[in-house]
Length: 269
Ligand SMILES: Nc1ncnc2c1ncn2[C@@H]1O[C@H](COP(=O)(O)OP(=O)(O)OP(=O)(O)O)[C@@H](O)[C@H]1O
Image 1 (tube, rainbow, N blue to C red):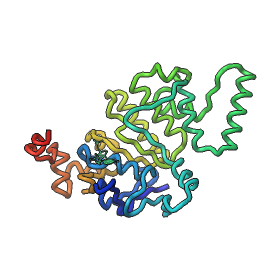
Image 2: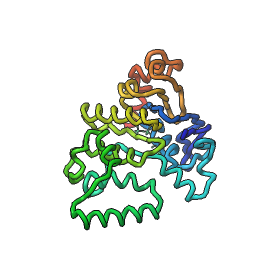
Image 3: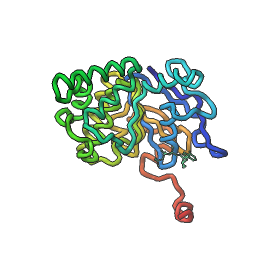
Image 4: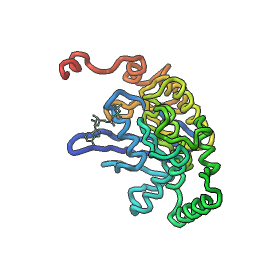
């Protein structure tokens, strides 16, 4: 599945947050959004994840505008998108159950009832918890296969975030939307998650990622999109965006100039 913002704008009341943004993510591609705080990265992800409808322009997936469909049909599209936020939010149950929940969202109600009955029967027969292969496979990808029966509450922050990623992946989404998924993580957990994101790309998932970590954007992206004050300034391969940007504003941002007028910033504090 591809997902495309077509001249999409988004505003709340009188404030325009995104202006005329056109950006596509294809299967097997990692597209990374960079930009200063408040540029509109999260808002762009929320449009791509179909949480918000553009106030102008459109979102299209394989040529269809999900907002032109019925609520139920749009929900079907939503189920094809996996989302990971900056903070892991796990349920107070085992690691495996947390990942399992991810898989279940892609299944219809009759299938879910079947799953439930199957689990109940398995529990009667074996009297011990079971875990299926897809759940274990997703946990393996984030290096937590052996932790499947641990209580999610006992995980470190980095491990919990890796489980969140495994949960999103277990649903076999066409598109992964990742909002600063490593911003609270140490280098080791960040490296594990980056590797998992790359493995997701190898499996043909599309990935749309927002990050403040320029090195991460440079490391893992196929294309980088620079967003400034709600406008997409430039999109291109990381080598170009970081080494030879076409737009002067991109150059200033990637060189570490904050693009803020310091006096203005101090005056506003
Ligand atoms: N629902 C809303 N109502 C009003 N303003 C909003 C709303 N959502 C976002 N904004 C504003 O839009 C701007 C962009 O917000 P957004 O969270 O998309 O930026 P961001 O680039 O993700 O920032 P950060 O890097 O700090 O997470 C901000 O100024 C924010 O305050």
